[in-house]
Length: 157
Image: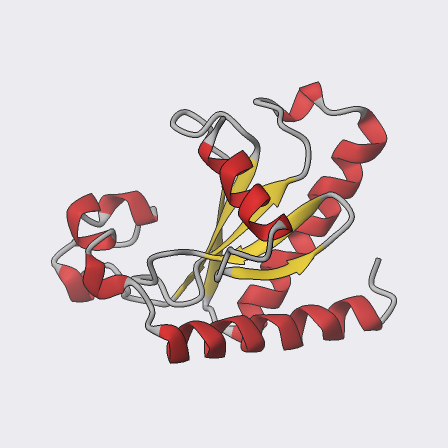
């Protein structure tokens, strides 16, 4: 079974501590590592490798919901810019990486200039020091959930 399916099964069994909210087409989770504070993922409910493999109505809804999750992360974590990534080369199950970015967030860590998060050294990004403790994780989840619920309650979708 793929890692994303495993994470979804953990959500369904109440065992995924990073779970924030279930939407119609996917699950909102806080990233395991928070070098980029507010890093959020949106896991597709359907196990597909490519967007074009989703039927049109589901795909449109999935993209719409992803953009709402990204907007919530933008406001919740006071981003200057959002990075949206749908890669799938390692985990072959549709899932969005949503990174709230701040001006100079790479320069402060030895990377010259602006660029994608992947310019930051992988070993540093995924270092155990970037894993939120229980209190920080709860704060991240509740902050994101508050913004997300505000957007959803406003009949945004």
